[in-house]
Structures are given as C-alpha cells and as structure tokens.
Image 1 (cartoon, rainbow, N blue to C red):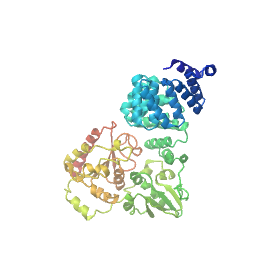
Image 2: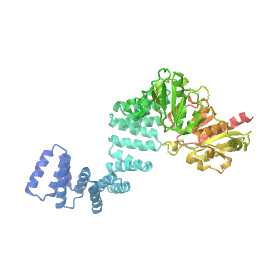
Image 3: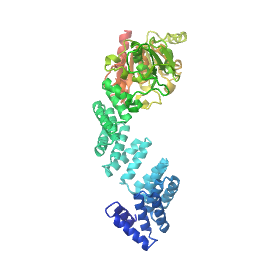
Image 4: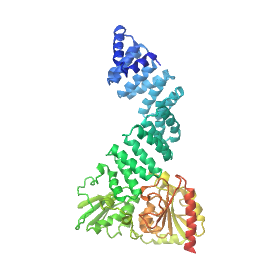
Amino acid sequence: MNAEYAELCKGLSSHRRSMILDSVTAALAENTADAVAYAVNGHALALAGRLQDSAAAYATSLSIDTDQPEVLSDYIQVILGLGDTNKAAAAARSAIERFPDSVECQFTAAGVFERLGESTSAEQALRRTLELKPASGPANSKLARLLTDRGEYAQALSYARMAVKQMNGDAALHNTLGHILHCLGRPDAAIDSFEKAAQFQPDWHIAWHNLGRACSDAGDAERAVEMYRKAICCEPGNAASHGNLATELLKLGRWKQGWASFEWRFGQSGKIPQRDGYYAPVWQGQQLSGESVMVWVEQGLGDNLQFLRFTRAVKERGGKLWLQAPPQCAALYRHCSWIDRLIIAPEVAEGFDFQVPLMSLPHVLNIDSEHELMMDGPILNAPALSRRMQALLAQYNTAQYRVGLVWASSRHHDMHLIRDCPLDLLLPLNQISGVQLFSFQYGQGSAEIAGNNRHGVVDLSSEIDGFANTAALISEMDLIITVDTAMAHLAGCLGVSTWVLLGEPCDWRWQYGREDSPWYPSVRLFRQQVPGSWQPVIDRVSHMLSAEVSRSLG
C-alpha cells in the first residue's frame, strides 16, 4: 500500500484534517503533477460528500501515476457511489486483472460485483482477498453474508466466526452469525449471538426480534414473548414483531392478548381492515338485528377449516352470515345450516351490512379460553360415498383397521421441510397385523406412491379432487395419520380420530408440549423431541397403533 496516501487519508478523519488539507493545497500549488496530493484531495472531497469532484481528483491522480492500486480502489468506490455501476464494474475488472495481489482492489471489486448481482464473481474476489489477508474482518464478514444469502449456511459459518473474532463489537456481524446458526437448526447457539448483537446495539429491533425467534425455536416461549416486546419497544410499528408475539401468546394459551396482537398480520397498526373496495364497517362482534355480515376468506385451507367454527357466532348474535370460502370447501360448506349465503372465492358479493376477515373473528368475539375454542361435536358432516367409491373400498377386507395416511405438506409452504415425514419411515406401519394403510396424499408428494400400491398401501390420490370426496373417504377410516396439513383440520372438523405428526418447531396452533389439542377433541399430537428426528416419533406411533388395533379388533 502507498504508505504516504494511507497515512494522510487516516489523518483526514482526525484532528489533523485541517493541517493535511492545507498541506495538500500547498503541494498542488507548487507541483500540479503530485499524484498523492490529488488522491488525498479526492478522499477529502469524498468525505465531504462531493463525489463528482472527488472522482475528478482521483482520475487526475491516476492519470499522473497509474500504479496506485489503493487509489484505484477508492476511485471505484466513488464511481459506484455516483451510481455508475457499468463504469465501476469495468474499472473493477480491470483493477483485479492489473493488480491481482491487491487486497484493496479485490475487496472493492467484490462489492461492485455484489451490487450487480454477480454472486460468483463476488465470491471469487472475496476468496482471493482472504488468500492475501486471511484475517480480514470485512472480507470474512462479506463472504459470510454472501454465502448466507445463497443458503450455504455450513460454509458461511466459519467465515462469520472469523469475522466476529476480528470485529467483535459489530452488532450486525453477531446478528449474521446468529442467523446462520439458527438456519443450521442450532437455536441455543444462535441465542448467544443474538444476545451479543442486542448488547452492542440495544436500540436495534432486529436483534431483539431475532432473539425472540431463537428463543421460540429453543422452546422458551416466555422469554420469546419478552424479546418480542423489547423489539416492539424499539420499533412500535413493526408488524412482524407484533405477529410473532401473537403466535407466542397463542402457543401459551393467552388467547385474548394473542388475538389482539394477531391483528398485526395486516399491518395498519393492528387495526382490522376493510376489504379493498368494500366500505361496509367492520363487525366488532356486537348483537345484530338481521344485518348481514360478510366474512372474508383468509390464508390457507387449513386456516379456513380451523376458524370455520367461529362463523356460527354471526347467526347466534342475530345476523345473517355471508361466507366467502375456498373452492375446495364449497361442497362441504353448503350443508352448514348457519351459512345464509356462500360465495366461492375469488368471487365477491355486494350489499352486506358488515364485514370481517375470517381469522379476526376470535378477536372481535373476545375468545379467551380453551372452552370457547372447543367444538361441541363435528362441525362438518361428510357426504355419502358414491357407489364407485363404495365399490373401491369393498375390495379390501372390511374387518381390517383402516388408516388414512398423509406424509407431505405443500411444497410451496415455507415450513414443508420441517413438516414432511419421509414415506419410507411410515410404510412399515402397514406390516402391523390388522392394519390397512390408504394413501390420502395429494399434490407433488402423491407421486411417491401413485398407482403402484407400494408395500400394500392403497393409493386414493385419484379420488381426492375436492374436500367433499375426501371427507367421504375419511369418514370410512378408523384413523387418520397425517403431518401438519389441511388434512389434519378436515379430519378434526369431521370428528374422525386423527394423529398429527409434528416436526419441530411446529405451528403456533399446536401450542407447546401437549399431546391433545384444544381445537379438536379427536386429535392426538405426536411431537419430535429432537428437531428433524422422525424415527422416535414413528416408533411411538407404531407401538400405539398396535395397541389400538388390538383393542379394536380384539
């Protein structure tokens, strides 16, 4: 590195600034070919925010002396600051070709490539930087973040740890390390990093928010609530922190508080919104005198099934229920006596007196106890089996214990890797004496078994073309074994005995630790004790299924 340039630039950030600027001015007056003076002037202008003038000064310096990699690096950063990414990229490529052993040029080039979205080029430049200077905190940090953004957490971990050693007081770095550890399924270790991030920057809501997430995944709901509240103190309008606080409160059974925070799923300061373009007031749960209430569809199929129970309150409080429903639920919902008008999404209707989103009903109804969640018997009735389906099931021994099976959730759900259970672990259940497995798997997962009666499992995927047919088939089963999907909610709404296999961390509605569910009396929960470990869960299911079959079939 040009020692004189580096020393003078360092001085510009200290009490020597005025003296150095006077020296530079004098040097340029005496010698207009002083490359270092032009370069230092460029640095001073950049510090003052005068990037155009800074670029001109740097360009002059480099025209006088082209062999200044440190100056070239700073010039490229100024060009990038001016928004001329094409020029910066061309200069960066030229710089690393001319000065392959310059730490400054390699590191600066990496920043340019990253800005351009050229991840591979950025990685190459950062790795070269670290070959030249292995202990570079900024390079280790940047490479850790780049690999993290690509989901390469195992590789990112070593670079993040090295960066933290070099830059221990950097809150953002500790946050990055915590994020990597969390993504690697190590929430306990992540907690330590997020704690340090919050310690170094106590007013940073992201550090507290991430600490809340790690505490939640480590099973410490009480502390997660505390951390989310600290995040909200730092940024009161942050909807994500309010939303995560809601799920923790609901997991803990603090229903009223949880439903209030749950309204932040819409943002808007936690207020229930009107549907865009429809200006009837939001129903607040008050008594009605025949007015109509439009209840809007929300989120996934399982959510719509789970929250259907609350729609009865419209009728019970003197109103007429207009319910928007997913197409898959329409045939089942038509038999619900408390629904006055059924609108199939995405269709809408006009002329209603009040409106409310489906999942806001517990809040406006002030639901505050498990008793108020419970269904008094099945909320849905399955239609009769068609003759074709009767004939299909008649092929199999009616004396056997029929078990419906679902092992995979939607591939589009961000939790599917946690929720899904490998089919091969479940297939041995069909070897239990008296058991006949039927596949209710739908979506992409059905291809694993479709049509080939693998290990004697009967494939019903071709019959699952809507919830009405599915419900009819479910009602013919003795038991449903399913991962966390809409199938669990459908079977629960029908009152069919259901065992739900839960990966950890699991969804808020299954709460913490319990084997039963306040939502469905017929549901039993089988939880992973170690995240990602399904075999002990299936061993327990196998043992209990054997006992259940013995009791049932004698």
